[in-house]
Amino acid sequence: RALKAAAQALGFDVNDALMLGADSRTLSSHDLTARAGPFRFVHIDGGHNRDHVQADAQLTLETLSSEGVICFDDFYNPLWPEVTSGVYEFMREHGDFAPLFFANMKVFLVRRENAEAYKAGVVSSPYMRGVQKLACHYDGDEAVLFKQPNSTRLAFRALEMMRLQRLGSFVYR
Image (cartoon, rainbow, N blue to C red; front, side, top):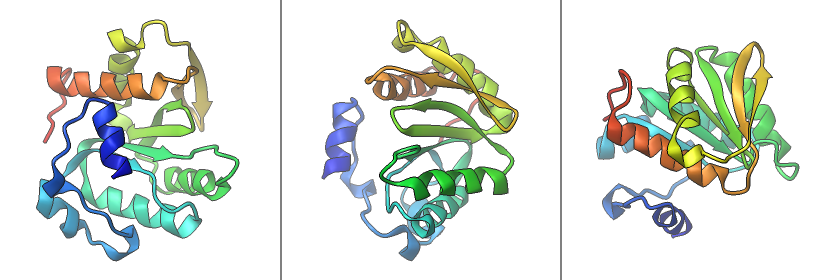
């Protein structure tokens, strides 16, 4: 219910037939892709220990489209340090993913070949006008830190606008 309410608050339509509440450690990629095909956006806000982060990340890898975006919640949240270490471990193990941006204890990752196009599209979006942006670096990659309380909501809207306008060479499923 909370996920549905949050999605609707962001202006997204929610199809109840596609909602699935379960522990990611008990799901297969087929359980998910059979409902909707490969995903273009996955928001991970599950268990907060290392095992959960790894299970969520593995399941996401198996279901993400080639143009997909992964958002990990509670990144750098001092209450959940294993989330941050799990995300760093994921990025080290899967070097084809790069950080796109950071906002409100969330990190958004994309495949390296898509990073510049996504970054340009989100940063230049009308939704992001007036949002303070700082360049930050992780292991040789440049990402963007958005420094306002509502920046996550605006970034979600910018990503959705990119999908609707089909910017660049991205094909969405």
